[in-house]
Length: 95
Image 1 (cartoon, rainbow, N blue to C red):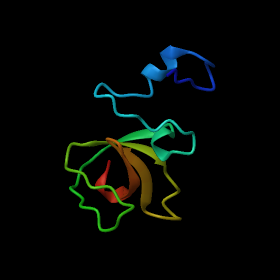
Image 2 (image 1 turned 180 degrees about the horizontal axis):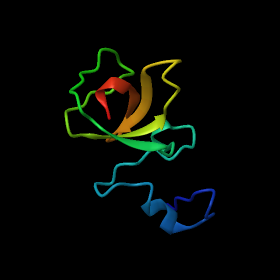
Image 3 (image 1 turned 90 degrees about the vertical axis):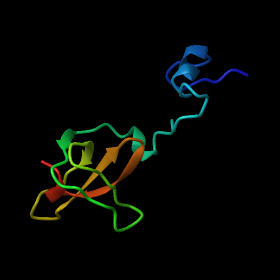
């Protein structure tokens, strides 16, 4: 079976980037939030435990990839990635 991707039709090399080193398929659909490029990286300065399913949990010293950072006047929540999790986090927990 040959896996392909739109950028390199019929290329077996493309499939190497769709499977991790344990053979698990990665999320490769463009609509998947994990594939949204980060606009910034943030250093966690305060431990946070998610209070809802769409929130991220992290420890002091973790790095969060920020994918959406609305103006502070609109909200104090950012959308980001931590590992393979995507969710919202309080802007006050990162610096």
